[in-house]
Image 1 (cartoon, each protein chain N blue to C red):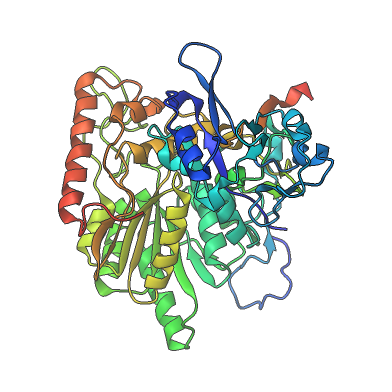
Image 2 (image 1 turned 180 degrees about the vertical axis):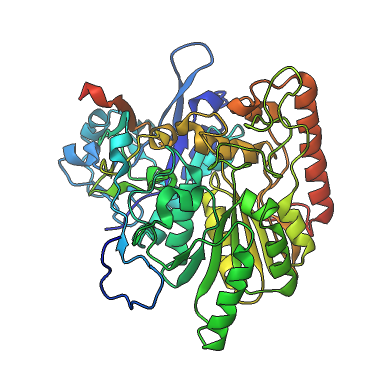
Length: 90
Length: 441
């Protein structure tokens, strides 16, 4: 175990830093937002389990560092503005 | 930042082309209807042409007179009759048919969402039109900090992860969290080797002692005079209804001031999808397999929230992520009640891995579970009794919900009838207990 800073040595081990795992590399399908179709209704944000939806000036986008590609955003989008495409397609 | 807008959604599959929305709109606007339903591709298929209030509106871009502009607060694209020069360029600029010409006045007419209370949605008898208010939730809570780290290793589409993130976003930093063994700590919220996935103090108690441990934490905070801390559990159904039940029951009986959130995915999903006492009848699990001698679970699920009602807790409620605003409202009440007594929130959480559903269909499963009355949404307080927060009237058949889930793929007619009968029985019991038959939304 790494040396913990700022932790009294009479305490049991406690967490002093955040887990840095990023789940984006799990993804087989990637959400692509059609900016012309997006009306900024935030439905994707509401239902994204990873909460990786980020706000842009006139649309919402997924943070691909943590997006697992579950496809809920594309399924739930009331204006069909999100398409899931295969990662291999580029 | 932190802006999003409510919107009118259209589900083409539910539209029967009755045109009531158009009548309602024409009446509300005293002129031509701003919404129109047109025949789509194929017999009995309809399409909608209505202003979508685009994020980056093309109509406003092409307007030479500056008569169209997006309202920053409501998101509605406003049409200014005084500035409009009737060139009709906007009607050509819009590729969604959202802005049209009123033949009576020979001027353009467009939807203004009736200032957040659209007449067309209220008039739609089939539910094809829906007023989606996710934008309002985002405006209220979107800027709040997510209390978990970005990367948690819940499965793709994990509904428990969604519940954790929303619940803690709402509750905020002033909380002490306990997550007994299950998916929730398993996905890295507790962490190990000096690392944590949660931005509030988080404990990993045993399956059996979560509520007892929290009772102790609350009593300590009470003793040192900290009355502002939310002491809460995010536990699975196993840790609540089976292994941890005696601790939960005891803490509820003593009236410990604790918020206990049970995330019910109907089984021990973290350890390989074994049955629990909240697994419903007929479910496939790894310990209730489907074969020659057994066709899934042979017992019915126990209704844990009703058992908690029998404890006369300060607050008991059921919720589903399919109805997020209801969930947010109940979180508010549950947190408030946890400073007065035992507060219990039961959130139903479809598990894409264990229930054998595609990850993208999780929210649909949530919604259909409620629409079919498989899951009922209600709340209980000692003062107000039990009250439905969503009407259980006019449910869809249980078969429509069940066929979405792979864990019920093997069900025969007799089993389906059994599930439907038990659901009806459950709703009838709740109706008997409810203070008012149907509560206002």
